[in-house]
Length: 190
Image (cartoon, rainbow, N blue to C red; front, side):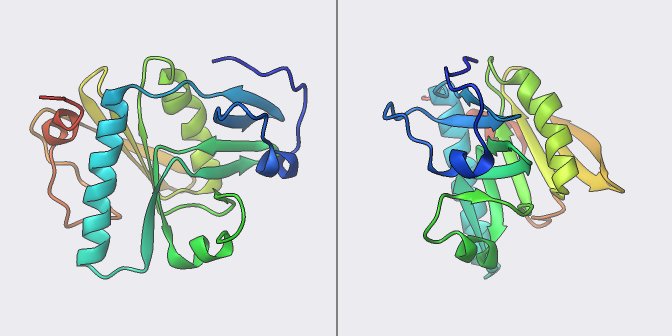
């Protein structure tokens, strides 16, 4: 991860920051951190999950929306770019004409692990999302062939690992029936 030459930036400045490169940045303690472009595997898994969650939201006629690569403010001068997040329609309406950086907790966040995001996905974001009180956080890890589902309990995450043909259990989407193998196979090009 590369830090840009900007030495310090506020959250408000981050919302309108554009260096003209088209790169995506997260804001971490007032510093911009360049996000490396994801792998094709990463994109395919995120796209498959987005389509699955969109279909479930539609099937249940829920007033929710699923977004890829939206921001979530996790501190005074911190903002993360999620791979996927599900928010209420009301949360989305608040940001209709401004930068898509949610300042309230999404219902669920899903991150797909890449070689350069292991520490960020498992450690930093975990504590930041818990502090924000995100009720459910998935870590989809094609590097270790597992999916971790973290459920917020009394301010801390309780973590359950799923592997192989195990069905993923979600509090947010309790009727969804998918296995780890299905999710990880979505990243294949064959």
